[in-house]
Length: 267
Image (cartoon, rainbow, N blue to C red; front, side, top):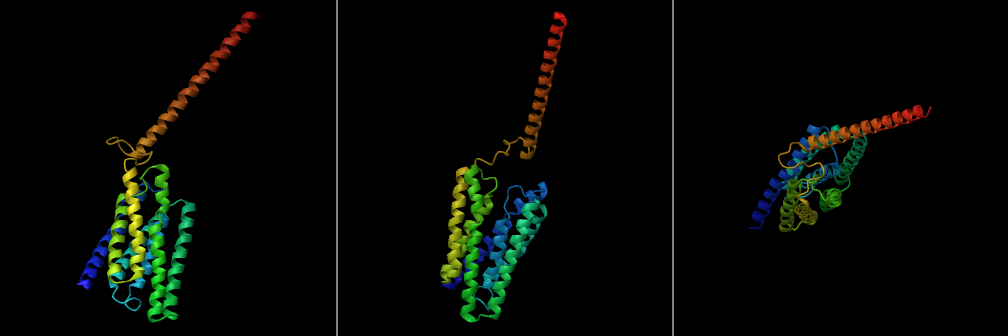
């Protein structure tokens, strides 16, 4: 019965994790449409990529037996996250692109090191512990990476850059894999996912608090695209400034004319 329950939560974890990996599609469609990454952070996608790679490696039979469900979903997640990272690199500003490339280099180096060490220097339980520790550390890093966005939410009192679906998926995914790890008595699975479940819950609480505020660029319902609204406001400001400058020039011209008239009268 325990094995059936574990398999059930493993399948649920696969389904929810797939939804988690696909939830940023809306965000990346916005990036492609506007040809800009705006204030979105690329850190979570790099951290997720590293976590997927290490978790997929940990779930392989010669590393950790009876965890093939961990490998299937994280292998799929790795492919999806690579696509996200490439899109981010294409549309990021130069400074952000260089930072992302550096971070991607770190991700590649860490994964390659773990693979080589586990294959060439370790065997049996030692290999499982080493790969499990690496996967645990970077799973926690992945779940903690949205902390910068959470700080932005609190600072701006806006959830514009913290998508609800992503936060919900983090919570559900973390909870499912937490139960899966508990049933299998695998601390390398239930510890990081327990942290993920907690942080996902915190994100949902923040969303509930600030959900009515979508940011300064948000337009009222039925008023058109937010970006267009911002452009209209800026155009109005420029037009107003132009009118004020014209009025000021007219006043100066009138004053000069009056002074010249007064001088002419005195002469």
